[in-house]
Image 1: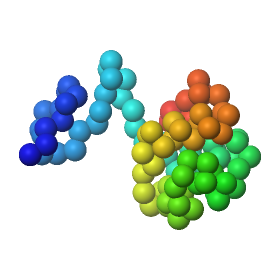
Image 2: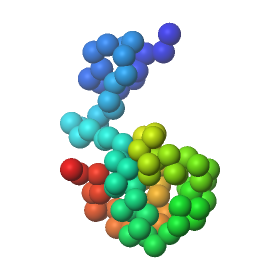
Image 3: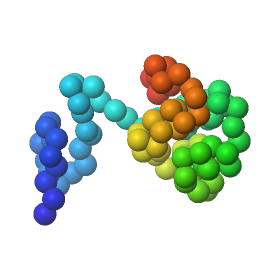
Image 4: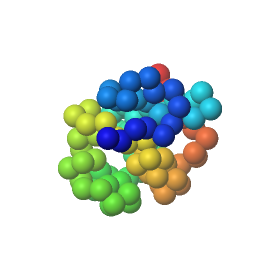
Length: 91
């Protein structure tokens, strides 16, 4: 059985949100992903290629069918040249 190594997880059998120093990282919304790609001036194909995922995966993220993992979004922000200090996923 795998036990999470981060703090704050009360039930090891249910999904836990990872937190670091009381800051919770959530997957970006579909709208946020579209906005970031648009700001970078990339097509879905180029955006997917940039972070080494399939175009279909990118499309599912933008359509809200699947959640984009936070590390993938962070990688996209950094590799696309967008300002990493901008927080796109705030409501």
